[in-house]
Length: 124
Image (cartoon, rainbow, N blue to C red; front, side):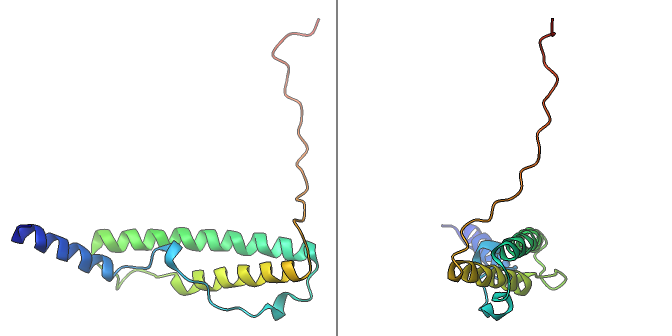
């Protein structure tokens, strides 16, 4: 490897080292299950959906922050969502643990009624 290639590689590694953590690499924090023990299985399922949606949004924001850091080489001005994402992952783990304790199974989501589409063939 030539000196210039080594310098470019070292510069690239330096940029990545200072960047926001990739969303998949964020580890959940330990969240006590106490807050969810009083909930019914249906309430737990609803809370899991709410927390899951928040987690997805935070993961998207964390991913955007990471790419912005990589492309600009600056992580000082970026808003890192790692702590919030770790909390959301921990909450979801706690909810799932309570669902398992209560043997909740999957709570069915109400189906959206399907309206029949207009027929492509004319009715005689």
